[in-house]
Image (cartoon, rainbow, N blue to C red; front, side, top):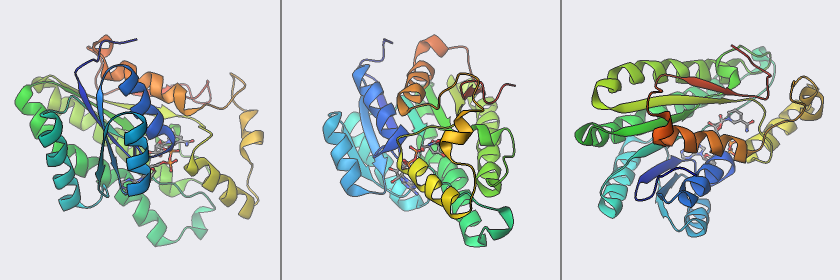
Length: 251
Ligand SMILES: NC(=O)c1ccc[n+]([C@@H]2O[C@H](COP(=O)([O-])OP(=O)(O)OC[C@H]3O[C@@H](n4cnc5c(N)ncnc54)[C@H](O)[C@@H]3O)[C@@H](O)[C@H]2O)c1
């Protein structure tokens, strides 16, 4: 357990999958959690589960994000931790990837992280404290076949993480990324399985054999690292991109 009581977190894409689990973990550590989601029903359900606050916004919509951040500040008065978790993924042969699909991944995964960070950081700067946690991926460190657009977007997330970490360090704000490997039990993973079947690509069970630790991961694995990065236990860490892949990726 970390001492996070009395602190406030915003978790984007917190209505399901990894984001939901991170929100639940942070709430169990005593934080007030705002679930920033484009899916109203999911946001309200999870906010109810963790006794938090649902704010409805698409991370790519500047006005919606601005209003959502103001609503969080009106409710809780501050934001200590921002988890940029909302993301989308498409897998398939690079040459079959529709341009609009590439653009959508860059918009949500890269612009979305920037737009929400830009809305939240001035408030952290004013308090000279904060922790930003970006969900990248192991695909953000190595260009995996059949993940061209997604890899490009997650490499960008790591670049953004490092640049913001350097700019924000003088204000006492830490910016780090988590790079999960294969996380099951999420809507994204289910959609990827369907796409892999469609293109005759290796399924999760086959890819699992490549993982040195012998198992894929679950959202709780990611939530544990997010709680650590949110806490003062990580007080001297910034600009890191932490691999969380059971050894699939080592660097
Ligand atoms: N599942 C994996 O194997 C895996 C591996 C590495 C990294 N990641 C990353 O972790 C994050 C979460 O993944 P997941 O598997 O839980 O995905 P998911 O699809 O299960 O959940 C994503 C959530 O984000 C929300 N969302 C999507 N686009 C949004 C937008 N434009 N605005 C607001 N909300 C939006 C969705 O409604 C959903 O609730 C993503 O950034 C993903 O790239 C996932």
